[in-house]
Image (tube, rainbow, N blue to C red):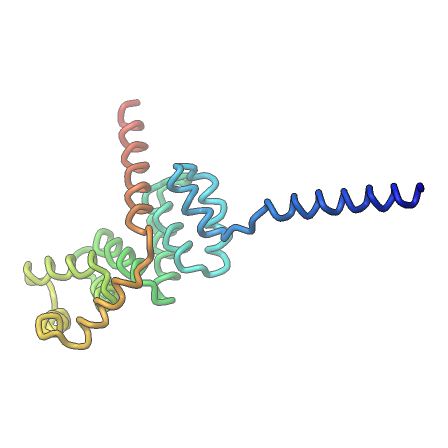
Length: 196
């Protein structure tokens, strides 16, 4: 009888343990970080992103760049932001290429060849913000013939246009919402610090 009770107790413990394990879901750390950002839990998001960025996760590197560029959870550090963006951009992530190009334009000036090169890479992959910036620079006479060639391809329906349009449908879902949330947080922080 004691043996039967012992086995029943073990079986109950095993079933309870299995149930507890099944309720714990394995969550992707990047998705968790993005959810933390949407909930405005920037400290938790930063913790997950920092670990991922160290393991060369390009989207996490891009978001770490934003944290440093905007001064969210960390001191504003443009050189660190540029480094994170560069790490992700060299892996081919168009959002990182665009962020890097834009920040280089802001820090190095409108004549930065490196900034234009990164913006062109992003634009050729369908990154709309980079395309718009290049158009503005072209209108102001600051662009070389490279962008004109890309524009000709866009107007003629060439391979570059198709490539860009295909990449728009594959773009990073939720990226613009994340950027908007981080921009809002940075603006609120800036506004609060100016009042004091």
